[in-house]
Image (cartoon, rainbow, N blue to C red; front, side, top):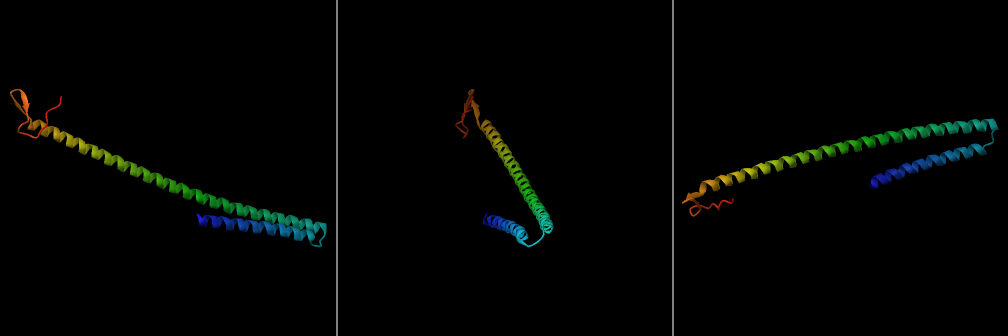
Length: 135
């Protein structure tokens, strides 16, 4: 974050320097002993040069903004892919655990049913560890 602030401060400083230099150049032209026609020509040239520099600077800023946008878009895409992968892994693990628990329940049901014995029409659990069958 400090690096970003430092870079931003440097860019502002450069912008202020260029702006101040432009003002100084215009003032120098105004106070130089020249004819009106020469002065207007030089002011026009300076304005054109300033406009060209501003367009160049705007282009550089636009390019940098595009790079930042592309990098952010790539990071968002990567994060989305990672979250999707994690979500799929969680879903798969949950499904496997559910199947494991379901198999354990079925196994316990089979064990319970084979251990229970019927004596005189009633279930006898005296010789097994099985619990009474719940209806």
